[in-house]
Length: 267
Image (cartoon, rainbow, N blue to C red; front, side, top):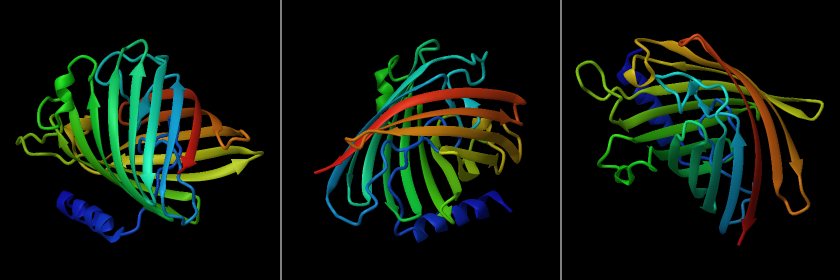
C-alpha cells in the first residue's frame, strides 16, 4: 500500500466522521496524548469544563522517550502534567502541558476535537521547549512545532483503533526534503480483572519517516497498562496506573507509573 493511498484512506475516515467523540481520560498509555477529561455521555447540550493533574515517573509517548529522544535515556524523570478542557456539547478544546523535573523538558499542547459515541477526531498542535524560547508559540516560526490530525474508533466497547498523521513538523522530512507525513497506527484492547483495568496495545509506523528514525515499516510500541481509579463523592477521580512498554525498533524497554486527579463540571 503506497503512502499516498494510506493517507487518502485516513483522510476519508476523518471526513466520514461527521460525528466523533469527546476526550477520554488517559495516563501514560501508548495511544494518543489524551484530552484531559471525559465528557458526560448524556446528550444534553451546553458548556462543560474539566481539569486534571498527573504526575508520571517519566514521559513516554508512542513508544518513545520524549525528553531523551536521540540521547541518553533516564528511566526516572518525574513529569508534572496539568490539563484543562472546555467543551460545548460534543466539541471541546483541551490544553495540556508537561514539565519534566530532571531533563527540564517542557511541552505545551492544544487539542481541538469532536466526539460522538465511539468515534473521535482531533487536530492538535504541539510546542516543545517553550520555556527556553517563547517564539515557538508562533506556529509559523520556530522549529519546535508540529501539527497532527488523529482519528479514534472503538469497536465492541473494548477494541480501540487509533491513527495519527503529522502534517507540519520541521524535522519530518524525506531525503528529498519533502514532508514525510509521519503516521502512527495503534490497536488497543481494554479489559478488567478484579476491578483493575488493563490495556494491551501494539503500534506500528506504516512507512519511512525520519521523525521517528525509521527507514520503513516498523513496530514501535508493544505495551501493557494496569490501572485503578478511586472515585470521590464530588465526582472527581484519582487514577493510578503502571505500564511496561517495549519498542522493537529501538530494542528498548520502558516502564512508568502515574497518579492523577480529574474532575469535570457542567454549566
